[in-house]
Image 1 (cartoon, one colour):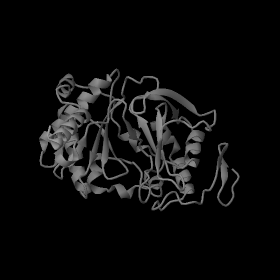
Image 2 (image 1 turned 135 degrees about the vertical axis):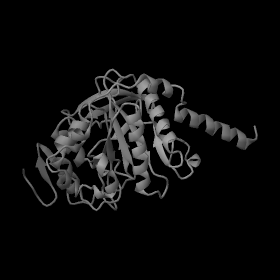
Image 3 (image 1 turned 135 degrees about the horizontal axis):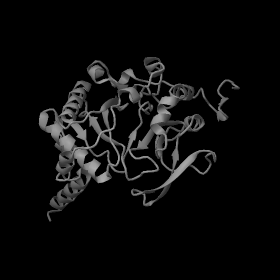
Image 4 (image 1 turned 60 degrees about the vertical axis):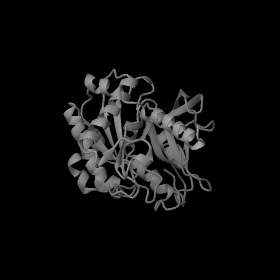
Amino acid sequence: MSSGKSGEERDGVSLTNLDQALFEGADATKRDLVDYLDAVRDRIILQLRDRPLSVLRTVRGQAPFMQKNLPKYAPSWIEAVSMWAEASKREVSYALCNDRRTLLWFANQRAVEYHVTLVPADHLDQPTYMVLDIDPPEGGEFEKVVGAALLIRQALADSGLSGAVKTSGAKGVHIFVPLKAPAATDDVAAATRALAARAERLDPALATTAYIREEREGKVFLDSTRAGGATVVAAYSPRARPGTPVSCPVAWDDLDGIHPRDFTVHTVPELIGDADPWTQLMPEAQPLPQDLIDEGHTIPVARVQAMHEGKRRARAARGD
């Protein structure tokens, strides 16, 4: 390794401008990002491996932006997979972050956040996880998120399932349920909707599945839309938020004793040591119960429902 004031080389990757602030309010430099990702590389690469990758970059002088397409200037040794992107109606070449030097290259590109698909690149029609994303209301305390997460845990148990939980790195948590193959995309999406609905019924005063923000009435949102082609921030990924927090695994029994801001690029390596809590806390892959799938197929897809509601409101506003 050759080093200088703000540059060095690791694993054949040239690292530059390491002393620059990562972004405004980061409380971290680019070196801190590189050092953190290198410290947890085995753990995070396990979550990124063979999954189409999108990254959020914080380039100086620009607003943070999500990058899906692997740039043409990327080294030829970075693996990639071509996928159809419905949003942009084009083929996108997604990177696969399968080794240390790919991770270091992205870190040098100021890629702070690492978002992956719920499907592996070689089975794009088979999600390996069901994911619930729990978001607090505006200004809501994390204690409410914990309460809603425990509703999801109870709904899972009542359905014969179990999952693992991690902080989102923002204000909420993500709950992952590993799935036994094959699990069809539509069935997983349906089961996710049904699970959220079952959790909502356990305590409708605390949690809601209302997709339209104005209809949530200050409740915790149980987001069941992380399905199909959706992505989710990977365990151990930093977030481009004040203090550079990290999406960190938490044991269920510890959830009510932590706060998302406890986990940052500065604290996580020491907190987890040589362990890989996400792998250790993750239960075995499970088949989805048929009754959960069947119930979910009776529940409208939230985004479609919201689109129709938006059109209805627009018509009402016009007086149609």
